[in-house]
Image (cartoon, rainbow over all chains, first blue to last red):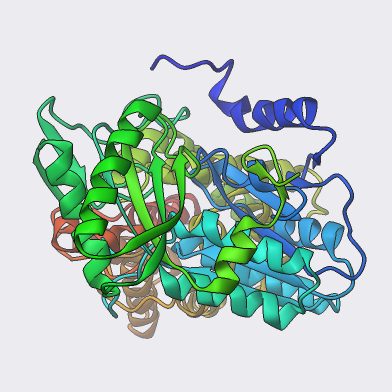
Length: 333
Length: 213
């Protein structure tokens, strides 16, 4: 394992120390339990957005804390959901008196820990609404799986709902925006390499030089299918077809197209992916009204990408364009 | 005469389980790499270390309070699915043995039953979903059966651990229907479930530390 770390046991703590040192104007970082909150938290009279999940997906979630996006982020250990006491403490720290939304990605551990956290918060009299992200079309949504995973749509939800909360919408309204974004978002990911969890010290799975894994999540878990590497044109067609047909999207629909790097893929390749995606969608008469290209929801050092499409309406476009000031996303300010 | 396990020996079981998890940390993580996200051994080891630290400050004598402290330590330090599930398991064991300074076979059966019910309620897993329930439930059933047949507590514990081992091995051909392994569908078959494996270790260490001498 070749990594820029001192000790695998300290990597999350030292990352948080780095965030605290880099962005004191945006956030403050609390240790034991660990959470990152807006520098001006709690914002009185504003619905608070709390998200959380394992570390290793940076800039998600800590990099999305700030004006116009999240109020708090709870980082767990690498690829491990945070604990209920962390989420409860973070929720308490940002509660502006009008309720807290918990944004939960659909993983067994995240669901159970956030369930316990919501029970703890409500026991203290806080108003909490939990919303679940489950946008990964690579997973069959059936009684026989844990359901679809929460992936790329999470980033878009945190931005759009963050803007909705910032403009003063109620707890129910903000939670409804989250649910609408989840209903309108679909994703699919692929990997060229595995990733290496620092504490494990070796790649989670092995991929041959000429192989790729299609339908991966964001934790180095194996995907839906392993196959021979193909040109990016074919890869994007395969992924975009799965996403578009899952909606299904039709001619004239407007989308936000999010091409995301998994952590080990350079921007030059992500733009190649976006070019192929743009050609594919325009061929079907689907208009890319907004786009986001870069590594925002990553899987440590995994090489690969994911494609997320969010079906847009005027409200989403306006909320997407609203000012945001975080370490990971910043515009209009 | 009924065999009873005193407080100190219950503590020794928790310590032995922690040591066994530490020894099997890489093994559990390797099992998890095949069908999950490669952190089960690492997380359980971190949790049991936190639990041992809590034990140091525990007033001695109350089995239930001690087991609850272990459960709270796991909930607040493990994360993932293992934290709420093993946390719930120990919290339920503790609730069922509250105020006891020693436990007998019937106490343990009541505690293990409450723990399995709690784990199933938290994780919503049914038998054959390829989860820790596949080791825990047969272990509980075997314990009940052995007690009903009049076996001694040590012998009942051994039968319970054997049933857990069989249940653990029986997860190998199963297709996962819960947790991260369920994303793999058919590809999850052929691998032993890491959660069922740590649950087997939990019951094996109980049999080992409570039935010798």
